[in-house]
Length: 146
Image 1 (cartoon, helix red, strand yellow):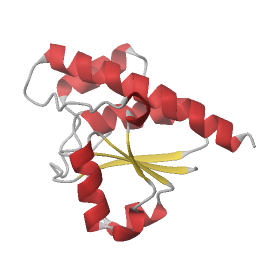
Image 2 (tube, rainbow, N blue to C red):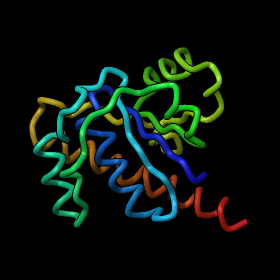
Image 3 (spheres, rainbow, N blue to C red):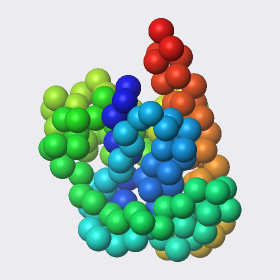
């Protein structure tokens, strides 16, 4: 699993944070993010940038991108934030079925969208994102070491 795509709605909050965490934890992987209804060209939300900076990870250069066929074809793994997004990706890109999972799949949780809901909502979302990325990093590392 060398090519990972992380997806949310606008690609300015959740998926850029997850992309930053996965990139830091899996330096040999290619990690990208995109949105189902991306705010194309926009930077990551200011609160997301600040929270990631506090963790020593910069997402300052991030600019929102729309999900597309090429990115989905390249991806070995596509991580979404909730079940509705999973269905949406699988409906748009039928070939992706089997490689689309929720970020918090193993704890059976969705990551709620913190957009416009204030810092506390971002902190809660980031806690879930950190847990989900750690679980995926462990699984990917086990598979890669075989």
